[in-house]
Length: 192
Image 1 (cartoon, one colour):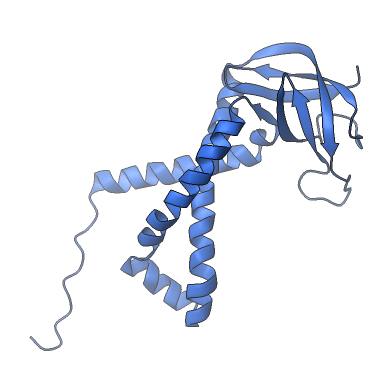
Image 2 (image 1 turned 180 degrees about the horizontal axis):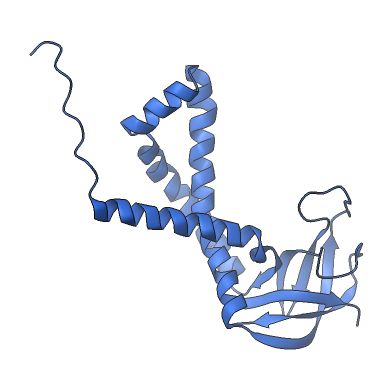
């Protein structure tokens, strides 16, 4: 038949829509947790997670890319970004990379929340500030970040709210927090 519209895709089942909504909520909440309490978490398995995270990110890129190429998403991108090169060379790749990064980081936020919920308070433990970023008073986020080494593990933590700022690299420091089987959620730093 001339001019007949193509058959529309069958509607998504309620179970699939609920699963997709749950996955989206899990990823968004985990990403927000990682930005919040995850910034003060020393993860015991960070080396292993970083190695696996690079592979997961690389594998997620084509999967999410194919998901973003559906008709509805393509139509939305065409309406919002009419110039093809902006849409195909900037918006589409950056959106795919952002979503893949959020999926990879979300479990770290949930692990930090698990440590906060199930961890037991630990007494002062000796640690060392390996490196410290420059203190910024005008920063909207963390005013000073530092590389903290405690119990043989090193992690980048936000020093703001944990100690009196500014701090200097190489400083021995006492670390207190919530210790769980996954790591240490740092709640306070003070001089020995």
